Length: 235
Image 1: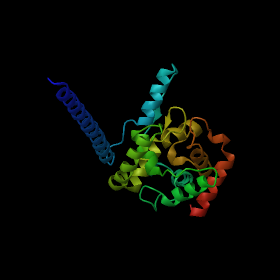
Image 2 (image 1 turned 45 degrees about the vertical axis):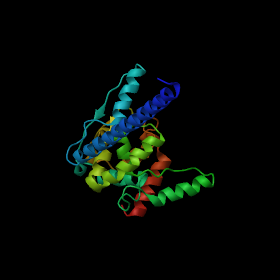
Image 3 (image 1 turned 180 degrees about the vertical axis):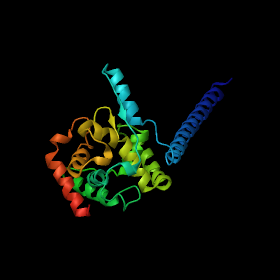
Image 4 (image 1 turned 90 degrees about the vertical axis):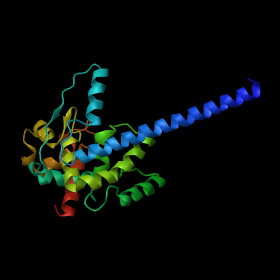
């Protein structure tokens, strides 16, 4: 084979291989996204047995040769005190019932604060946190954020606000190996989620931003802020 023809053939094969790799990668991404959509649809009726965060914590404990005990009990939203529901919403997503998955008002405030060099509070909604908790764990990357962004509207559409809140309160991390409101209330206060009081609810909500480091008993200042937000919201 002449050298010129040989070079052109190799270049053509490389181009074909590159296109094939892109097509394969694209099909894998689409397949994983569709699987996540199907799981969200199933979550409308079926309580998820585990989440990406729970799997991540178990793997971390195994890699560090540390003991790990998962405490989790799924309960209906009707068995979670309204005080705890309101405290979590006030702490994590005050406009939960007004937005459709993204709180653009909070995002704008965070962007302006960041530009001014201030401390950014964070604008992730309960829906965003639920999607991240179920599928992506605690990792941070542009790809993860992009995938999360496409799944949030799906979650809002197929689940609805009540189910989103129910799922969130039952899977969110509330301490080392502690997942969900029922386990959190039993672990920290020795009572079921249906009996948790107003101040206790505010203290539990206060540890959500950093559940592996914070403890409800130390959240005097932030729990007070949450209680004030609840009062302003009419709760």
